[in-house]
Image 1: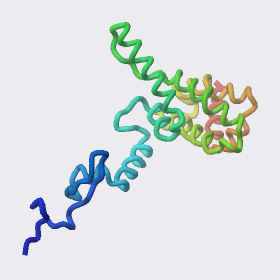
Image 2: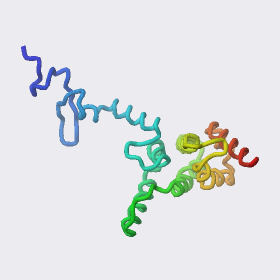
Image 3: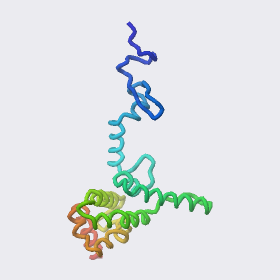
Image 4: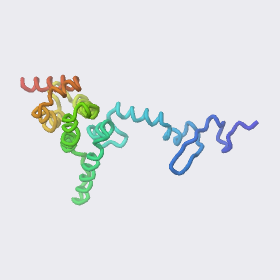
Length: 192
């Protein structure tokens, strides 16, 4: 009795059917192609990248988390990247990391402030934006009770303008961990 499949690669139970834009194919279940299109593997890989806070093709820590958690910001990230690449080509220079300040400004103007003005309809978007900010600020190497580089950028570009626009308490309510961190850093910096 023949226990190999028609391709001679092994038992039919060891094979999977994958569907691509070009057709359906039988491939070994444990092989690269099967795992690349296995939706469970793809979703697990996505979750692992979000947990690490870095994509396999990393743009920057902030841009990576923003891309993964706030897909609404992808067009703005792309535009910033395209501008940086165009500038490097026209000036015959090397690529530099994407500007976190420019991304923070884009996040504030295009997503966070409009979302806060449209609560509760945009609450999910606002919570995801705040989550990204909190993760980047609190997980930054060297982050402490007095903040770090990302605190400085986000405070100037996002937190202070939101406070001025009357959204400080809303931020504290929607992301209590971020609110606690914000107040801790502001309190420590006031004592300095």
